[in-house]
Figure 1 (cartoon, one colour):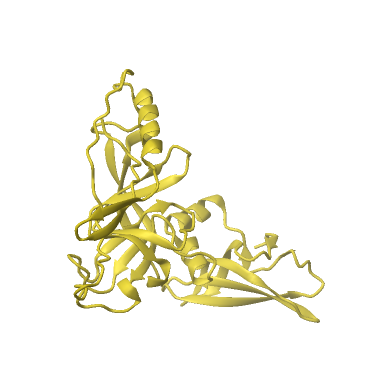
Figure 2 (cartoon, rainbow, N blue to C red):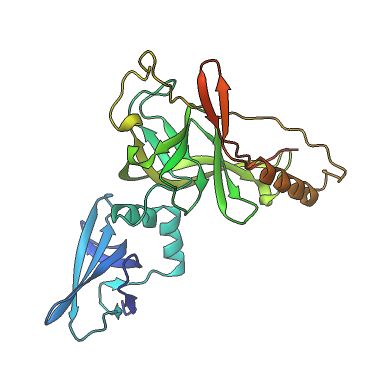
Length: 287
């Protein structure tokens, strides 16, 4: 390898390591340790066994502190970088290094029975792919998950199914170092319409979720306690418009306007059994 590798924390690299033989594996730069005669480039790598390991590469103290060259560290080519992206390996490295937390579209594995769900059931976090969640997230177990571009170009994930949570503290999620294949659906060619939904599979990071932060075998709340049970509701909305909704472009514009109207503040409901909060977040529409 003869690439000039930036020493910035989080730089994505390829590294030659010994892993039951010489292997080229993905890694991220953790930083450069100074020294009087030599500096040490620290790189977190993920081995083929799924284990993480920090490799240490020595470079002369006279070398630049902003970028270095080393025989065993380089920059992955476009094809290899994309393959590791598709396998969520960069995400797993960022999570292990503490550079990233749970994000929209990540998968969640339940560690204990919870309402109608069993330990081991897989769910998904609602939100935008590649963007941090604001301290808490909505989880839907046994999901039917839409994953596709929103009106502002970001990739959004919204799920129906259940049971689910409205707002789960991210502290209840723990990293697993694993990725999993998550079934999703999207619009064919990005155009919404009846019969245009198509299935797909994506590989995403997997988090373990223990509701309440500890193993709970009986999710029934004690008498007098407020239930934290949440549901994901799927509503059927009929749109009557002057425009010809048979045209996919016109329909997309009308649906976008509908979505903007429905993204209101949380609704506080006053019921005979106590208050409840509902969050409206429609992101797809079917004619």
